[in-house]
Image (cartoon, rainbow, N blue to C red; front, side, top):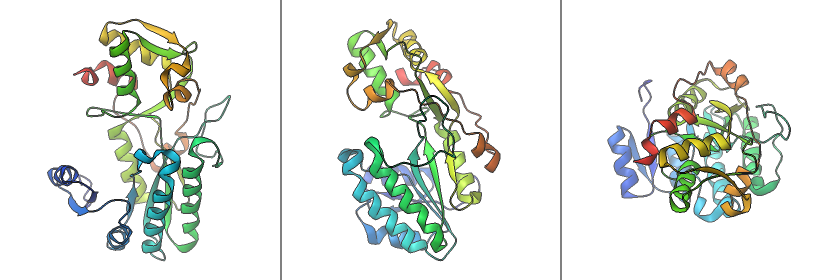
Length: 273
């Protein structure tokens, strides 16, 4: 909106509708299962940013609804050349830093979501300006209450230990929510059809450093814990080294993250209020 766009937000609850109204955007009531609502709203728009996913159904269980929503968007935008941004997760490249040029391979726990992204990209052939925006495991900033950092803080509070897996050298990419928002805006305006964008501010933050930052604020020690103690999906994430670069994205769109990195954001203290 600050860049001059009129924004319509999908709201499945009264609380979400109120939040959208307070932001100054227009409300469209409905959820991911309301396909006619999605098609109608997309057809009336100059572009679509698809961020929603039914996480209550899990990565696999939520995939059919995600696929149906993507189909509704692509059918409404077919032949228009308008942008459609699909949200994914930054990829992991064993032994090196992942980039925007890495192949999307439909395997592992998010295989179904990757298949949906691959299908979305085929809409480029129907004149839809599809781009993928790949988000790190940590999108941080004031107001975040449901991501992995709040989960780690809650565990540290309950157990009196801020834990990390192994020797703690495994790395997470991260981005501040406001920097991510700027990238979505730049992408909807300028991203080329078929582009893959990495919304990465911090290329890789060691999980031990994250645990120590949390421990400082809670006045508890940071210690190595067996990865399986964290449960899924935290155990898999804490035990994996998954740095990712956004160099191509920055050059392509002129995107420059300007907000605090993950450790500085934790040190601001808002997570502990």
